[in-house]
Image (cartoon, rainbow over all chains, first blue to last red; front, side):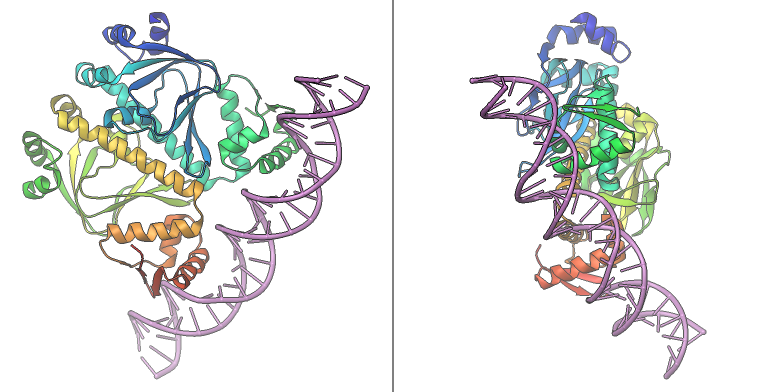
Length: 210
Length: 210
DNA sequence: TTTCTTGTGTAACCCTTGTTACTGTAACCG
DNA sequence: CGGTTACAGTAACAAGGGTTACACAAGAAA
């Protein structure tokens, strides 16, 4: 564990802190599609991403859902962080996008490290900043862009996150992430294919413009 | 200044910190409609709200704009905070909604207080949490609600913020805040009036269901 | 092979929202 | 007082996207 931890975080945390993390952190592996946090969960551990990718979703009471953003190595979920500190329930759902390794930190340590390590404080503040920025991005997307632009952007993000130009998704799954219907996605995908931006096959979409 | 500061923040900050704030903070008064921060500004001071209300707006490159949320007494702008720490430019615009008094803190102090005062750390974390929650709310609103619901919600918020059931706004101003057109707002306001939820007059809207 | 299941393509239709254009009217100003 | 400007009401139409329904194809299962 120490090796992976150092690989992902040596630019961010001081040595002593990495050692502490490796001592108290609990390593966890999650499969693609596996839930990490559900809306309404009490959050007792803060997750640091060692490897893989996680997608963060927002749901409303009617079962509608919407993709907020993806997390990658070196990231943590600021919403979770925020819930930990405030002892409130999770406002979001986190689902593994690929094979993912995370390390869970007990919340007691967070308070302690906040006064003890400057690099920890900075990391926490930077995480908040990064997540706020991503939320603004999400807002821009849904407020100012049309569905075809949002779709193309989604495919590019997905290709990047999965490090592969082929996105293995059904149209229905995409529709859920973008909070629209399958028919709309099929329609727009066909349009994007005609424009030469993607290539369609059953269960897979090749993104040509990365 | 000390009196107002204590009135707004005595539940939040310890005495010694309030004293420090009053010593280094710069008091500033802004009129309704006056800009406090513009997108792209370098932020060198962190604002604490003593009195009044501020609206936080997001703009895109095409000049489109969208209301994110309001700030009130005891709040600070986490985006600004985040920009201060990270030395980045502002991603948002802040405009006074009423007569507003703010106190500006030089960023050097923030770092110092973060290690020195636990109440400061908590305040900063809670501010981040509050703002993230509000952003999620904003996302819910634009992703899951229709324009008539958004409009009603906007009017209620506005009435609450201004402590008055009469909202003095032209339809055009509302259209800017909700990122739509004047005609759409006029249409929906008329519908809401027919439903008995509001009462319309020139330059003013009375919100009947608070 | 046939059958069943799942995913995709597409047409037809509807609703919400955005656009253009024009009218009326309150308030202000010379 | 008439003229100007800002604001509001409304009709007619366009566009985006959501809904329903159905056909068809690829794989999986039998």
